[in-house]
Amino acid sequence: MTIRVSGAFPERRAFQRVDDSFARYGASINGNTLRLNKGDDKNWKAEFSLTRASQDQLIFDGDMDNHKVHMRLELVDRSKFSLVSRGFRWIQEYPFNR
Image 1: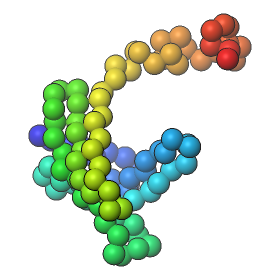
Image 2: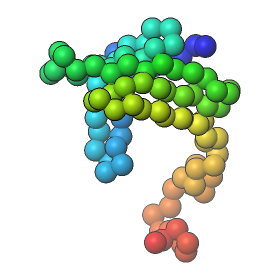
Image 3: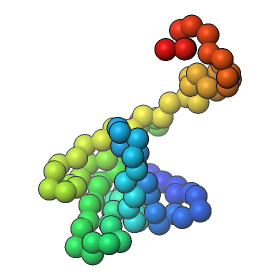
């Protein structure tokens, strides 16, 4: 399994929470392991094993903040997103104007 990390800061990761705020961590990937740390807390760490369930799915299993974490990420075809398939419009017709 190969996991590619791209971007201007490959050693940093940001995760968007449900309330739209961001959590930022230091990150490293070694083989099938993702390790997270917080720069301001040297004792804090999280570690996840990575498994590719299928070509379109990636599973994270590990511990974070004394909680067991299981995440299943699924690749979504970009053309399924309304912004890509419909295009951007300033005025949204029904049912998109809710």
